Image 1 (cartoon, helix red, strand yellow):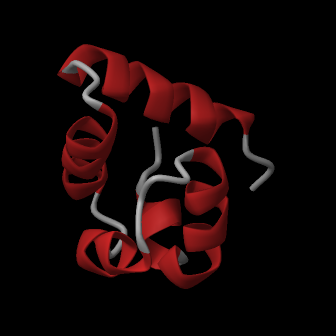
Image 2 (cartoon, rainbow, N blue to C red; image 1 turned 180 degrees about the horizontal axis):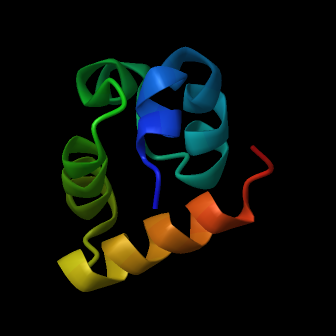
Length: 67
């Protein structure tokens, strides 16, 4: 997966991330700043998902996007 595309365009991608994971706050998104490990951690924190589930969810979300 080419996560560089997400981190390089974080300002544009933030809205899509918020649509998918609405419990993430604007402050969360600013802290994440395009870093996948930070995104995984915040999703785990807000939703209580296991690490493997979060990784799968992010992979599924990423592959469903029209880049």
